[in-house]
Every structure is written in structure tokens, then in C-alpha cells.
Image 1 (cartoon, rainbow, N blue to C red):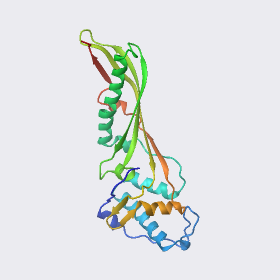
Image 2: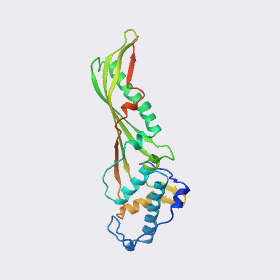
Image 3: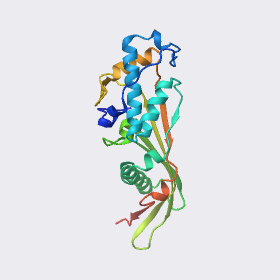
Image 4: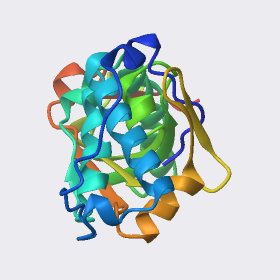
Length: 235
């Protein structure tokens, strides 16, 4: 998880402050009345962060914080729409991922490893960094996308190309670890600075737990700009 500075805007401050119920037992099993003053302060900030994210429509940022606070450490499956609705994700897949798939397929054809009728699984993986002021920026920051494409080699057009490479299926998986990075912080107007080290201290005390994040981006192939590569005729 790669985060830098989080800013939900002044709307977060408008949601007001939170008062901890003295009888609430947090995921650690510790009632609020037994918390230290610092833990109470940080937990109140956490509630305000969640409310602020919800107030500005950052649903995944809020959901990930809630899941962390619940302390189960279980995998959270984020909806594919959270990624496929973002233009930067579509651009990443249509450009860097497609070009990497094409390059590997072309190389294998040129090396004689693939020929007409061959079917091959090609896998490529890249780290993606979300643009600022997006839900994914606040929810994850950086994450890994892995494409697994099944390609089929076809005959080229006579006199024009030697082969074509058709992508018959294209599966994309997102993976990340929702955790805290020492030395990083979040600066939120109306709430103040939240240090990753403080959140890690809460986690160590049992008030939250890091967890894996995954998402399967089904349906991208129908939105891909191209699914066929033409290999120019050898000279």
C-alpha cells in the first residue's frame, strides 16, 4: 500500500467530532473506558476519517478503513467497478499491459516458439499508482495489476503480415496489502495529521489489523481498445 498525503477537503470537518462511548468494546476487546487518552484521540480521528471519506463519496477508502478497524485481517474483495470506472486504469491496461502482452507474443513468434494454431498463456504484472484526489488514491495508493491473456496465433494477410496474434481471453487481477508504512503520514483538514506510525501502534495494541486486498476485473476484454496484434511481414 503506497500512500502519501490524504486530503478529504473541508467537508470532512463539517461532519463534526466524535465522542467515544465508554462502554464500547473495540476489536481488541478493550472497553473504551480502559483506553489511554492517546488511543481515544486516535480512534476518534479514525472515525472522523471514515465519515469524511463517506461524505465526499470515497466509498472504497471508507470501506478499507472500516475493514482494518474491524481487525479480522481477512481478505477484502474490492468491486471491479471501483477500478474499471477509473480512466487511468483503462489506460494502463490498454497501453502498458497490452503492449507487454504483444511484445512477448511477437518475440515468441520470431523465435519460432509459436506458430499458426499455437495457443499460449502470457502473464504480465505492473505496479500502478493512483492519481491524487481519487477514491483509489485514498483507498490503496499503489497496487499491482496482473494480466493473464490467452493468445492464439493466426495466419497473416498475404503480402502484408506473417501472423496475427488474437487475445482470446484477458483476465486481470488486482492485489495489494492494506497496511501502514513507517515514515508516512496523512494530513486531513479539520482532523489534523495522522501518522502511519500511530496507526501501526493502534494495530499493535489490537485496534485494527492489516489485510490483503484483491479484485478480479471481469469484463475488461469487451472494453479493450484492441485484442489483435498484426505481426508485419519479415523482410
